[in-house]
Amino acid sequence: MARTALVAGASGLVGSHVLHLLLEDPEYQRVTVLARRALPTTHKRLEQRILALDGLAQMADFPRVHDVFCCLGTTIRRAGSQEAFRKVDYAYVVELARVAVRHRASQFLAVTAIGADPRSRVFYNRVKGEAEEALRRLSFEGIHLFRPSLLLGRRAERRPAEWMAMMLSPLISWAFMGSLARYRPIKALVVARAMVRVAREGGRGVRVYESDEIRRLGRR
Image (tube, rainbow, N blue to C red; front, side, top):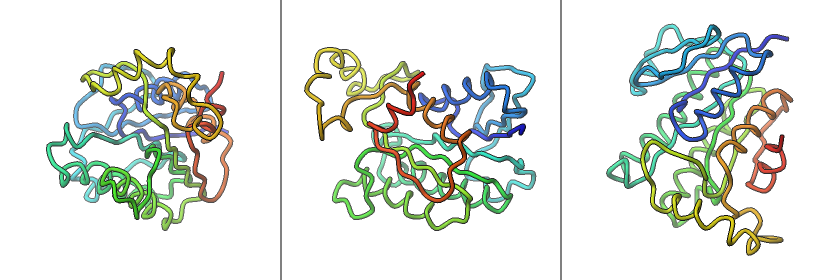
């Protein structure tokens, strides 16, 4: 069956890999990107919709797709404040899902974070958990929540903690064994592979994937 997909956050670390994998996959006959500015990628099956995410609710021609990949996310440092961070990592994510379910998307696949918990004392984890909680209430056939640990890969902007983790990862991977395996840094490409694989397998209900399971699903 030919599939269609929408990717939000396609200029980011995980989202850019998701987009590339979908365009390589012959099962996907159309891939739509929602972005604030045009991406340099061109492909006969790629459609780009340029809009500010504040206008999602008013978007009259939201595409009908099977799978929605939400790879939106920022950091408090980059956003500039907790309020601005919450707008990206909660408000935009949840609004995208609400609009998608109204337009009969089948599956919603979102990147959150390890430790996501709506009752966490850590603001970052609490916002991620609140977003997950809101998504769980929506009536998709499948809701898939991916909680990666620290992401590895090349970003357009430098994040010192991630750069340091990428440098040290080969030296300290042995320390993340047993119950600590879920905290081992993970490559963004592996997360993207896991997301596309899960979308194609089409599981129903709400599923949460921690880093160790993401790593298993994202193997070639």
